[in-house]
Length: 407
Image: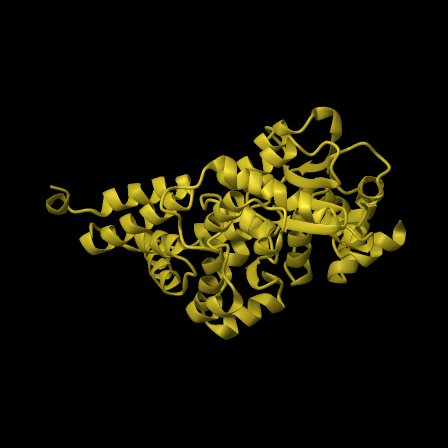
């Protein structure tokens, strides 16, 4: 078990959770789902990622989605991620109505004349899962379940209610709090919830040493541990401040002032303008590829952010290394900066729904031309079954329509 923790940066002092992951993936339990819960920065995602690596080592196929706050309003964003790389057309057992509905929802085919039935989309997803598990076991992994868009959550819940007796299981994570609809669709008897708790004092010391090469005196370590309550994200941010030469005199506040809120705020505020823009772009659009990001932000700034670990390449996309970074990037931007960046993002958007959404958020006043384009995108979204997108875009179109054009 120690070698597992050593091989995964960030998974330090998590031997009990790693043992649960291994037991779950080895089939030693009757669980259909393993749910990791905990507060922001506690290490859920690191364990979730490690679970996928353990699954792959065991010959289990993984379908993964990592929702973000920037995508929570985009219909089928999570489903898009789960089925990325899956050729729906090659699934021989998929009935034609389900295939057409699923391809329309995922923008792999032209929108249908009428909106596809939600049942057809959900049934299509379940049929794909059943086809895939015919050849090998399957793990459906969703991080930050609280940000999964409503349309994808409905599809996933449909599959969860029918998972008994199948060879697919779920690895889920979310922040502590109310259960989601996906969890509610699973029989509580087959869902194991593992609350990811704080690190111990010794694990915090190892984290600072292994990740930052930082050794602090025992008294300072105790003060750091007491201030961060064993939260690895907060410990790392405070450790970086100390490693960077900032002092922490006894009786004073920690050099990371916002430990109780967003510890990334101070770092983001100190970034130069090009770097803040490069970080803000994926905070406004969680689906940006590297070429798209380079098109709207300074390439050198992007490379610098990747080098210091604030941006992470994730497949074809580039994302902030932690959701709280995206929050800090938005909070430390001005409305004019966001509007200008939304306009640039509209130019590189890969589909009409995203393009229209960025255009709507870029325009500060009523504009008949933009209103018309957004309304057309709303119609297109409705025709592919993205009811939430359609409603949101219709509201934007109405807001942007001048009184004279509405008469």
